[in-house]
Image (cartoon, rainbow, N blue to C red; front, side, top):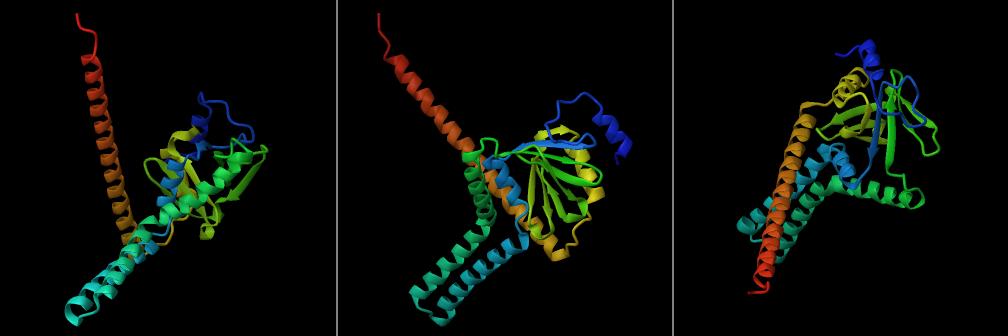
Length: 248
């Protein structure tokens, strides 16, 4: 683990000019542009995995109940179809929970952006005593480390939530102006007590991560297919244009 002295030596190395409002004793400084993509990534790892799994389970059970009722008890076809549709909607809603949270946050950012073009930019910093955010007027608001209940991270973002998730901070791992994502992860482990999560909650976390990863892979494949189709179309159009050129 990096000691405080090591962090101070790293801080004194050549680094970009710090934004106004950042205290001189800040060990880590991050500037994040809260794009829609970053917000979605942050919300996907902070929305309750237990609630998402509960939606999935209820939807699947409704589907099973509809099929069993139809096959073994002769339930009316219309009722069976309605229950199946309701089950599918429940599963779909569970998969969309992170997006609902992201949509709400994005909507707020868009409203704020109309009054302040820099509304999506977040400058945050960390000291030994607290985590802080620089407000639009240049002042800093700080939160003691004891206020935070959880810190989670992926390869792209880090998220810090206060008690009962009343405040969410999303940090782009590429936005560190002082310090590195790896050192900051170690620092967070030293300052935020790990959340007490039982085996069922951990299983829900793993299940949701698997589903999200699968969804990301599918989206990436679709994007690659669309890109390949566009390239083929452009090549065909180029071939047609070259074929229509003047002949000797």
